Image (cartoon, rainbow over all chains, first blue to last red; front, top):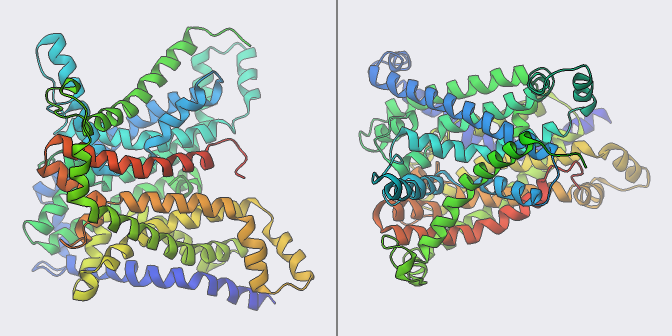
Length: 273
Length: 263
């Protein structure tokens, strides 16, 4: 019986395994070999890490993703905690508005950033009316930062709210009745309770910011982030080997961050995706 | 009801600002799509001309995206539901490997997956130039969402007990799967389906590299209109996109709203 059972489970999983093997693992393996097909061979992977152009691009991508993650966690942490703790008229509508952009594609978010901070954008129009100077920052790293935070807020708020609802309110009551100041309750009771969810959400946020392409593509092709560099190497320079090697470095960094987060926060990281 | 202090209102104000940040640009872009001349402002009058223009220019891409999304849904249902069932039934090394694999499309950037597909299968001209090439990318990207969504519901209910009950009454595997397992996982399947269709319609990272001039999807057309058309046309196209995707997202919200009870 156990043997038949095991066979049945394997049969149920087989189609997915075949599709992923044929269209994901095999192609990635080929891409890995192509990354090493240049004159340098597999040393091409190491060479990327010393080429100043690529290092600058990788560093700015990591810095951007880290900044996006930090900003998103603070913003979504405050809003998510507030929404899960309070009931007031209009709360459900507010939750709906905050989670509506859950699956907006990067290109559209790029366009929304242009609507806000572009040449004909709202921020420019307001600043022009107030000070006579048109503030435009959509087509730069700042615009990209804004777009990625926009993209990450809905998902992170959902994770924070789901986690905050599971916290035991008696712990907070206990801390308060023992005379803890509100900021100490937040620091010593609420934040530790939310930590796994924050790590999980932060890891997803970091990973999507590392690999995102559509927003940068819409805003400006000269923004120096790694996905844009890969795209340029592939299409304009026809340098498939470099594009392949860079893709693997990007994938490896992202994978490592997710794996670190998973070991720190338990298995919930995958579930937060 | 307790009295609400300054802290409550400060947090409320903060949350309102965040939601304004998310919603105002959506409203602005929808408005721009029906404004005669956005540079002059709404005073120039409202019109549906831009939406009609978008339809003339890009209706093919909209139909193609719907076609791919539905095909992608069919593929993820056929592959994902049995896979989730296989994972839920019993823990095994094979199952764990599959679960590990499911994290990868999140970790590996879509750009890299697309490059890999082109490198491996780009030589097959017929496949490369057909919409099935894009479909493969979309299935890789969305399948984990379907599996996770169905698996979440399967783990929450006592599938084993229900199945043993049915088996003891003489139900074979097929009857148990279609009569017990599927009906009990309806909510997970529905939530997963909404997510798959939404993600497929909006997928750009991979599709931009996978598409050909004859297989342009909606987001590819969007990028094209943002780059080369006037702002009103890009906005009108975005408006059409929102009209397609917002009902799906609202339905999705109703299902995943964190209220504790998933069913």
